[in-house]
Length: 219
Image (cartoon, rainbow, N blue to C red):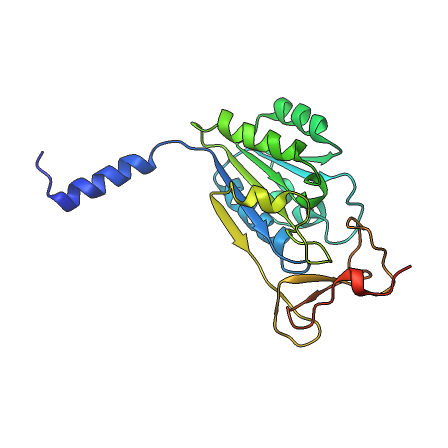
């Protein structure tokens, strides 16, 4: 068979993309930017491809609304998908044990900032990508990369440097309507970096309207 140079190049890239490779995708942005909804959309696509999914949420996320498991339960495809496992994670050992039990095609973690306050989960995921690098394994991590003081939230921003794809979402500033990239803590909240809450504690702000939590009155 004789190929032109263009046909040879096309054939080369087709063969290249047939190679199996583990991937890491990170979905990030401020609160109220639709990170969990984007994660659900990606998992729905995986379900149509009949891939097994292991979905994790930190046990510390006790919110009854805007919870990833609630979103999945209300999704027409995922709510009845038999190859979807859901798990509340407390620590890295808990995550390792549960993952080894299920051995899924996709590992998805929502509200990941609560699990990335140190390098334990970070190291596990990086090692897992190396271990599975020759397979069609996918990790999807969704979470905040900045805290309410505008600083890096744990080591999640460092994980982004390892990602094959980063989906950076914006919210809408409640003050002026501009695209919002910050999570604003409302007056009365604590100075803790980790404080679980929703509209009662937080709102989305643009760069112009954002005020660091360290400059706000607090209890």
